[in-house]
Length: 111
Length: 113
View 1 (cartoon, rainbow over the protein chains, first blue to last red):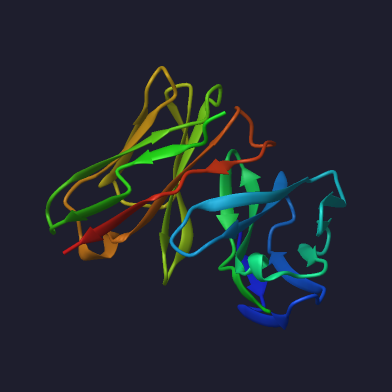
View 2: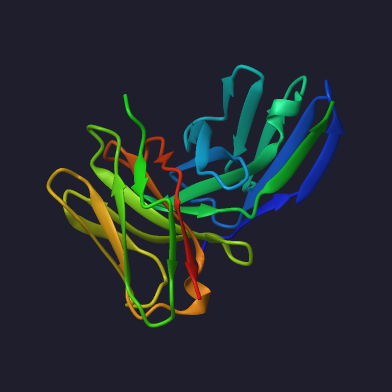
């Protein structure tokens, strides 16, 4: 069974800093990997989707990389803002449309 | 384009009762997946429907069931509710393929007393 781990579980940074969130998975036979953010009590918002054949994806201040062979992905957030405060989740699709989620990293950006 | 909608948003039930949750996917999306989110277990996959057929199923007891209608709307049913079923239930839709982005609804928060 696919297991997804996210480190750190919580992160607090001052506004303006660049930061990296980590995601690792045990089974490298994935279809794709997706990063989400979740605000308290809300649903998930998709940030970036990386297909298994891709190495990275970028959207604005966000950049996600994927290394299938080592079972790792990173989400890089440039010039962090207080509005970036949320829980960030990564999910991998190993079979069909079933996503396996990590436990998330809770990010707080201090003004 | 309207996003994924879920009804109701909040629900309180007592042990032993049953509950039905509804999910309307983004127009044109044919795949609907359901997830349970709890503080202890995180997000866990329940099942996925495509063209009215269950295509994948997670590791949940038979008390959890679902269906999808011809208009792609989906319902999830939980029978004989237990305290541990208290959770945020999320549905997600995508066009048709596991290669595509999943779009999540706001969720239904279920509290079992």
